[in-house]
Length: 131
Image (cartoon, rainbow, N blue to C red; front, side):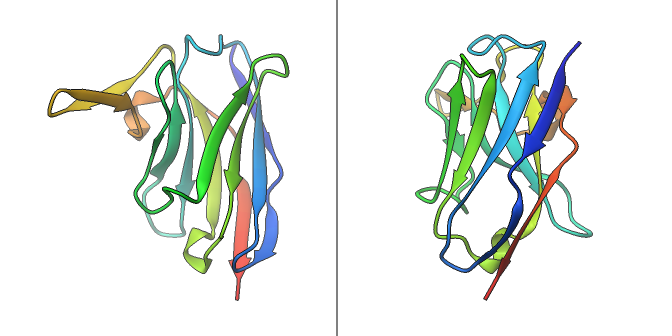
């Protein structure tokens, strides 16, 4: 049984950093894709960062600012968020897939950021960035 438990959300000022965590049980790191998604009120959930066997993949809106990482020993994956903006305010979800999920275009494949590719979800943690 897969369980994902998030922690670390909170309120910060523009330009500050925040790291959120997702403790995972029932998955095998490196054999299951893991990812972070976020959802703003009234909007669809969007993929932010994803990692599997390959180099991580990021949404354009967070490239260069966010980093996804995994700690196999702690069975935890993280999202380090730097240079936060007000538009990063959202409910952040961690997610895991039942295997490795990739998206391929023009002959290159990347870890998937598609919501439908992920099978297991955390409860969500709120991140609020104020000016």
